[in-house]
Length: 462
Image 1 (cartoon, one colour):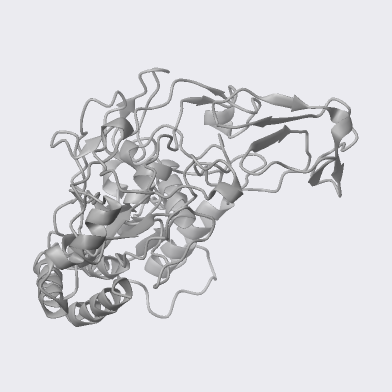
Image 2 (cartoon, helix red, strand yellow; image 1 turned 30 degrees about the vertical axis):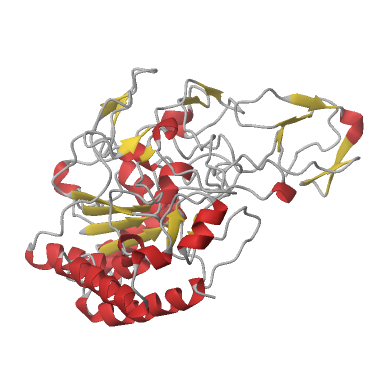
């Protein structure tokens, strides 16, 4: 809540991009209702960034959630260390943390602050599966915390989410000289859990995912701890869209790539790793050394008629929120002073616009369309050159060579790729079985996934 809504010194600004110049809106042209709602005299322009910095009071207590999760899981595993408190009926033999997006960023932040070590020096979680969290943490332990804010490409800009450090092991920020690491900040190695970082292509465009495993000068890949694996879901968005796909404020159809089938297999792989030491399948993600991870301008995306490739992506910056932010979580500099953006990289693609690296679902290995982790905002929403938040694209191939030649689409048509539906399904099922052989898919899920492939064929042939 704004402490003094009538304060004449409050400054509302508007800009077109995160790094763009701010224009101050006259104080006479807007007011605040109910202490929390900005009401401009002439309304808001779509696709622009409005920003108000104000004084508030009575921040709620934040950060105790880490202690609550730590103590609850520790109690379930080891029983209570408080005299007279009950013990769990069936103590847990193993504890796995699982977080998707915001809750995944919560787990990354929990590790940073050392909460995988309980008050009796025992490990809390044996493992963590952290899904589509990108390179972020979050405002879970700061004054005036807003845990739901996530620093997306065109919303919640410059919030303390994509902030150094990003990698498990210690790195040096070349701009600030600060040395830090997600695991090394507070945790001795004996308390490190086994970790799966799982991201889709979207997180590389919209959530700074490349920073969890590259050098901060963009020069190459960094070493991972023996306890960490990284997986990228090729051609995936932040969460698969419903099928059949639709447009919701985007230029292209949303991306229905059903990579969550792989999450089921990775959970089983993690369980085997913790339970009996069986090594999980190798990390599978794009690497700088293999030219699979490149700057945005280096992506060789095909020139598909009517499809605009992004020229702007979400960036992360060295951010100065004030001298007490890193040690006490107190932000005194809003908006933050920012440095030069970190060198974010994105996956390279093949001639169809499909990621060359990562876990390639049958939809990617035996495609009927181009699946991307990015989409652009629809013109009616404003800022049509900006990334749509959390959305990817589904761009079907032409059905026939004649259609393709007429439109000028450089991608081979479905007719040129497959002799018919049976041929397609045979190849699709073979790709699914190959994933199962590598333990990126459960064998029992192959047939169900093949049924989905048949539905996709029928959809694109309409």
